[in-house]
Image (tube, rainbow, N blue to C red; front, side, top):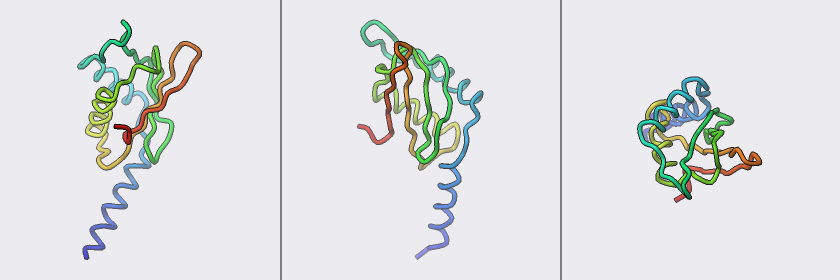
Length: 115
């Protein structure tokens, strides 16, 4: 039944889900991703991220302070998610993004379960 292996993988996944990502490293990495592949323009404006911080675990929640909260399209969200998983060794973990826009500081949530 390989119960020992299953429990080992479950414990490893729990450790990953409870991990705290260092804010300076997270910000540098997201800035690098934005420079490497710029998001598409929407209504003449491009998503700009000013600051990123981890705000929770299970799923890992990343809050992005940006110019507008409605500009994170699904393909770009997946690009950010897959690269964060690879960089921080979060395989098997869900990542949820919360965007805080400048005008009125409104919020939008994006999770890995959206299609």
